[in-house]
Length: 161
Image (cartoon, one colour):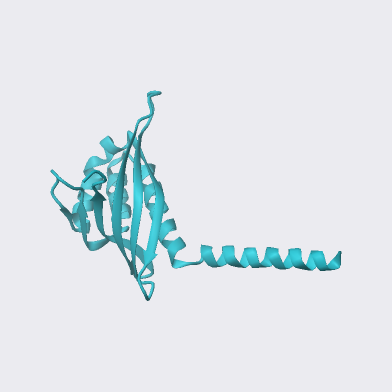
């Protein structure tokens, strides 16, 4: 009976150690950063200074020289300043949607300073009883900059080529 308790305790400690190592891993840090981005996108604001502060907050998730490629028919978006400008201007229109990131897969490069991420971005229309979902696959390049993971490139993946 005592041996069974020791084995059970050892199994619990091993599982807890594994869970702790995964929580503290760089892969987990990348996922938490992306979920924080989605949370901040969904928070929104409506007042004048709030729009500017929100744009700055959202801009902090991107590198200075970020490139966002939304695919055919859309021009590339270049630079954090452009992303921030767009975030402040689009707030009233984007508040009707909620962003949810799912199926996040993180691949770290040796040295744990860069990562490639694939994910699904789901845009859910809020209110009105008719929930609609528009989902897009994205590939992200991320860089650890000053202790924070930032998006340096985002590319929409054309699933039906």
